[in-house]
Image 1: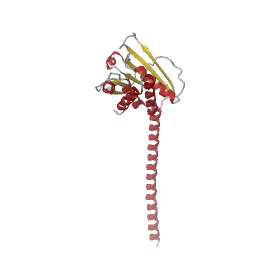
Image 2: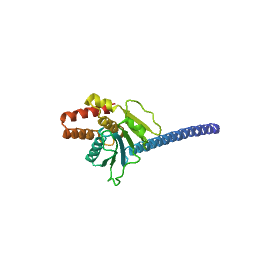
Image 3: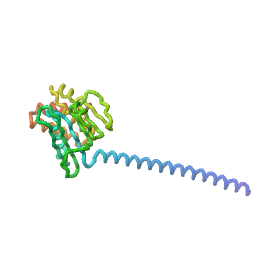
Image 4: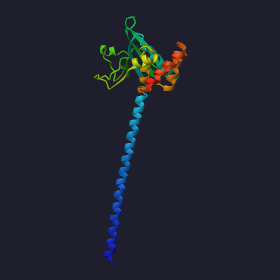
Length: 226
């Protein structure tokens, strides 16, 4: 009788030990899952913060008459419409058709207290591909008007779009600014897409007419889908 009781006691003890072991493993698994969730949440939040950073700066490098100033103006107007703060200004070389120029844009959720040219932009935009080899761009991200995939050193990401071709096919002339604007919006999400389209339409309608406004909006939408 004593042996039977001892046997049953040991069996129950052994089964309880297995149960506790399994529970411990489940607890560890659950903790690991919670940790993974926490790390994912931190990662997602960091990406969101990077995307919605307090001050976003863009430099546009072009030749006169390519529409770089219009890009900066349209983005600045849209940002202000959304209650943000914006600066858009340009820096010229010689006053002649086709001369190299730089346009600077700042967009922020807070008042902008600096008014100097941008040295290290978050994004550099090249409207004329011939300017790529004339200057070193102190940025990690490049947007280039080019029909070719370009491999350049020292840049984290390079985005290309054949903006000239899109413009010629739809507007009948080489004005790469609106296709380039579409790519800037697509990769940066600096302003609301719908608000930007509204400003584009208003800008060209007020400056020219409804037909030109509709054509430029169509060019924007074609480029955005590329």
